[in-house]
Amino acid sequence: MFRNQYDTDVTTWSPQGRLFQVEYAMEAVKQGGCAVGLKSETHVVLATLKRSQSELSSFQRKVFKIDDHMGIAIAGLNGDGRSLCKYMRNECINHRYVYESAMPVGRLVRQIADKSQVCTQRSWKRPYGVGLLVAGVDRQGPHLFNTCPSGNYYEYKAMAIGARSQAAKTYLEKHFESFPAADMDELIRHGLKALQASLAEGELTAANCSVAIVGKGFAFTLLEDAAVQPYVDALKEDEPMQAEEAAAGEAPAAAEAPDEPAGGEAAAAAAEADGGPAPMEAD
Image (cartoon, rainbow, N blue to C red):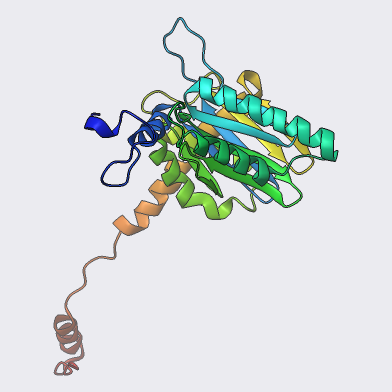
């Protein structure tokens, strides 16, 4: 992507009022592995894909624990994500030391947004090329936030970021109304189904996905490999049932009632059977 003289510096505005270096950082988020987050009234679930550069390499971790009540999932440059993770952990430790309580989720997200925004107005810094899904629980209940390299942040009921995240968003938009009343296991299944929708090829397995849960009275827990295998198995068992339900829903629509003769023909046939003239039809 070439923008002439307007994309050589993060502090240079284009005539259209755009900062192209910031937009490039946002494009880096779209190139990262898909990450999905969703919340209920009691829990928040994060689900990410574990991608490796080749068959000979290991995967890079996409989910990080910040504190007992908070964790993040990242999409974009892993190095930038680890740097922000270290900063968030230090802030939580300092808050516990000073106030002897867990740091509110919204306050830490706002600090991360401010830190990201500073990188958009300093010529010797570049924006962080990573997006964060921040899941946590505090006195106000469960929270799910999304931060952007531009310094914006939003709270969501459900969100997906990264490569091919639009397919996951489509699934979340169709089912988000059922999330508040869902229990933890059901919420995990929804997260894995949304993550599966983002796959370009292959299928979801315990080896290529990670799940993290945090909730009221439930510390941040990361599930990988054998721990996430039961949920993946349950996902595969649900697929035939969903196919049967879809087929059953299409059957009544396909099996329409047989064609009946028009109103005049039906009346004439009835009249002939009775031996009298056919009644007149109303306009």
